[in-house]
Length: 213
Image (cartoon, rainbow, N blue to C red):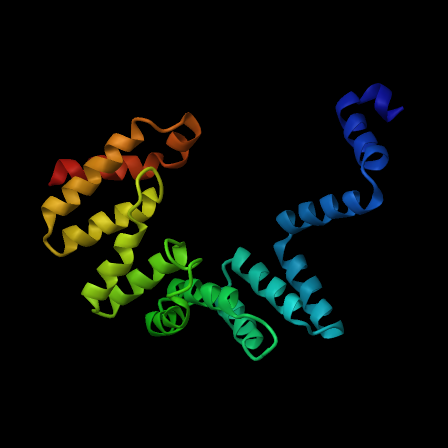
């Protein structure tokens, strides 16, 4: 009856119940529930830890906290994983750099970054960028620039490079700021339509800053 009278809804129900196996259907349902009610995912993961307090369960809970921007609780979970001596802690420390930066605890952000700053997966990443900005906030300007400049790569990292241009402006290095802004503006002419939409605010800010220089 449903398939006959409501083709679209009927087709979706048919696909979920007949095409996907039970595990797929449960996964889809859980993902939808997490989007509609993100706190349910948190509660489910907390109960999971009570049943089985493992490294992977703690990491999953910490990431769920990040998803809802609860960085303080995320920090607590990531810090707990550092006690586990059987695992590599690079990922947890990367996330701690991000979380501490978001709550403006720049000292701790720098502390964790300096443990992993020589790792290949740290270089050129958003965590390195947070490290650079945290150094700037702590007045360690030369070190900050060294980190921030490693994010300056053509046809990528547009938001981060805009922040680097702002860094140059803040320190009266206007020619360097203008050169970088012009590079981003030129690259924006060759963006795909989807990227143009994604970075529309960034491009607008680049143009505004160029006019002001």
